[in-house]
Image 1 (cartoon, helix red, strand yellow):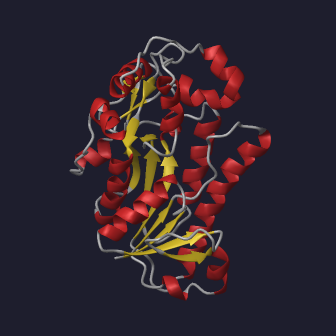
Image 2 (cartoon, rainbow, N blue to C red; image 1 turned 90 degrees about the vertical axis):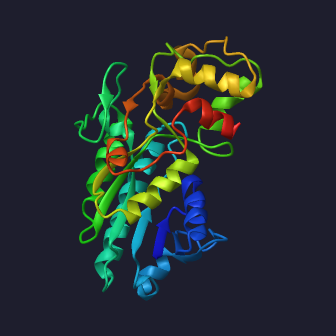
Length: 294
């Protein structure tokens, strides 16, 4: 298959391009910069595509992972960048698809599980209603609305959970206190953490591309979410470090501001669509996932 990936130089994008290339697919990395070179894909810039989209004729699929990182202090300017980068990326994909003579069969667009809101007691899957309760849930609402404007192909909206990887993403920061021997629960420890191993993350995107029955939202989370306290215990065990030093919520809020909601407010999110369509997770239990990563 001929597959284009936006955001291919990002955390998930790099791993996805490598995975798909190993499966024998032809990969094109669509980027803002010609310097965002991938060793496994040909890079084309959005500027080049505005001149001519001929190189993308015959595409079978587009995976849109582009967007400003949320792992930064949420100043007003940062919030604007986070929102607009996602909307603009989806709009650019919609315009590209419209220009192509032969449309791709599927567009997989990144999204987020924040769309369900937060809760310590509720369980969410793809059939749960959207709840705009904070900044991130609002971002996802606008992000998915922009993706819905892509007309023609089958649209899959992958609502990404906490992706666990040893080198990039949130995990290295979460593991740092344990490396220093001062790890422990964060806040109450009761908040749910819906996680997924990076290997399953790229595998499920591949699965969504290939499975014509999958349309609409897909929760990219492992089947067994855990509480923050349980996650810390598993991480301490994997790293052979104690899990004894709690980090109060007010300290996180002082350090990270509104960004602290990512660790203090939880969601128990289940991957109903993936399981119903026969996807097999390699990492079901957080203990096995963390042992592999550590």
